[in-house]
Image 1 (cartoon, each protein chain N blue to C red):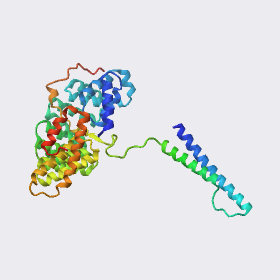
Image 2 (cartoon, rainbow over the protein chains, first blue to last red):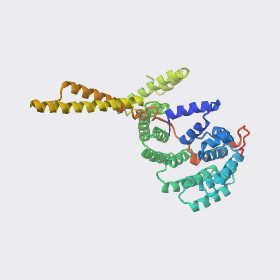
Image 3 (cartoon, helix red, strand yellow):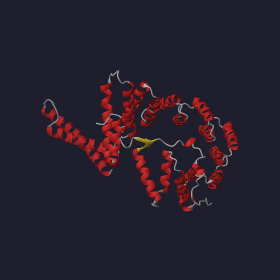
Image 4 (cartoon, rainbow over the protein chains, first blue to last red):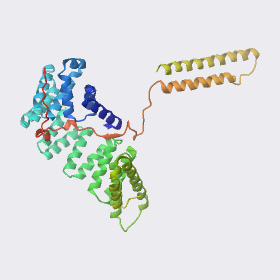
Length: 302
Length: 106
């Protein structure tokens, strides 16, 4: 999870590293800690450390972590020769390691030799059938080949064993959303909210899915979840603010005529609209007229 | 750090001194055979000063307070980690390779 403070810290560090201000190792450590995918930068700065024997020797045992990070980054950037060299160095150091075995299989994946990679993963799983990372790689491989239904099948099998893995639940939810299977996606997000109730982004994603499904009941629930996102973020999530406004106007259209309990809702959306206007005035004054017309079209302008 | 520690130490000393004064005062009362109704005013003041110093030291010495608000900058989650375990490699980088000449030198 990336918090606001960490995001600022990361951006500062990235700026500093890109302008040659040093701190490459700290930057790479932060990338690993926050699990971010900035492969081009990881590759560039990681290689500059690895190619400098003096810098490399100051890292101590962390050197090998860096080799792994650079290898994966190189695969992501299709610099397969670099990835191969890194993997070779790791294999030389750890001849028996499963983790390096996984890296080698990933290299096969990056090359596009799916059958060989599949074989490698199968043999690794025979040795340690409960290795979560390898199970996940198989899902990713199915997805990479365009076999989405296969990926879903693998992922469901995986989640039957490792139910507490929220990353996998999120992946499943995202796959379902990409296939427009919103009911199933909603179930996954419910699971995520249950396991980590304080993460506002899950509430937001759940509300998005419910709003997309539509229908009065779903819209009302979606509005509640947008409201809880606003609650958890202190009103600093613009998407949730817009969500509340859209939900309110959609509900109003659905219940037109049979008016009941409308007054309660109107307060939430007018407050959200006010906050939106304030934010736009502060951060993007030239877009303010656009916002006001948009809100007016939702009959929400204050 | 040093200032907090010294003031905490001082506060504890002041408290001990107040306790010692009270004991002495009671011994004096025993000699004059009067009832003990409460410590004298200067000891109460000393006790209060010691307490304030101790509280201040206890609040500053262990470090900064962390925010417990979910919407504070330290706790507000703005983005989820990229799901690196499910990373796939056939994306547009294949068609647009990085314009960098890089090699791992051993």
